[in-house]
Length: 85
Image (cartoon, rainbow, N blue to C red; front, side, top):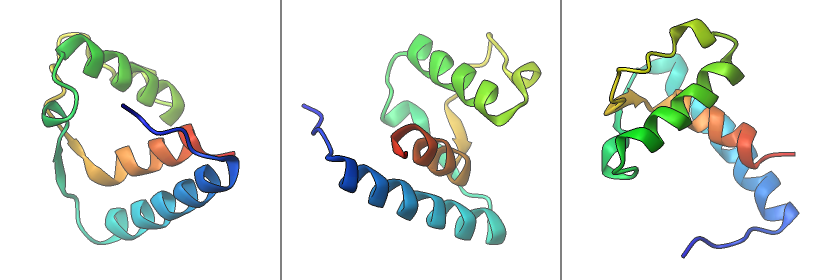
């Protein structure tokens, strides 16, 4: 069961995630196994479609990709946006 964050907790989590994304993205590109967390392929596709829209590159979304592996810093940055102010 997901926990509900207070506004303050969400702002803190978003800030920490963005700092981590900046750190990871500037040094290495680590693969993140999205399929270990989101088991259903269609849900991964929905998430990645939203990601690419947010990222300003909707043309890079591939509806046939199963999105098993993604870059960790990309997901950190996107999630910082999703839960942040």
